[in-house]
Length: 242
Image 1 (tube, helix red, strand yellow):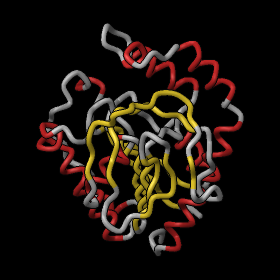
Image 2: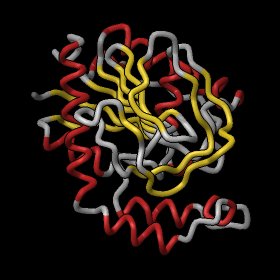
Image 3: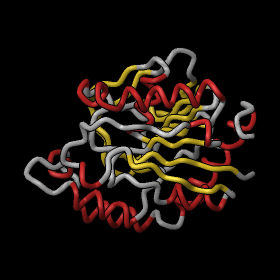
Image 4: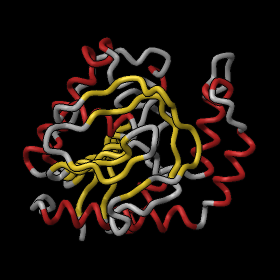
């Protein structure tokens, strides 16, 4: 299967990493779009002119440090990105939302997003109803919000703290970060430094994250290959990939 995939960089530090590699292995040309460029990361509240999703076979809204339910963000560009998701979804274009991107997909299709009472940060096993589609893991988490399912969506994975994956038409939303590799982790740890950083707030040792990420470096790409192959088959069965 071949095609073109568009990765939406909702945050300059949230790149496709392993996801880009696996889509390339799968025969896809990779395109990217900077929703919030690096020079605007300190103030992401700028209007965005999004590309036409119908030019692509798959769009992938990626993660971000921001909150998908932030009214200011929604008024400036998140509502426009959700419109893009709905346009893609209605046309049968594959939509793969990751963490913040998955939350945008949930909101775009009629679900809600709010603060989670139990944030998740680190490697965690998820309970999957479809291990052939989404292996039980472990998968990497870094989030403090969670979604409610859109009408008609099918939840396929969860932890005690949050829903972790759902399908709806040609869309798949993920709460976790399948794209993480050691290089991306270092970027996130460095960006999290500060007095109110997540690692300190949630009592997570960066050294332990590094060690666990290194230990998963061989197996994580294989789990992701299974996930991407199943997603593409799901999109194909929905008549999306042309």
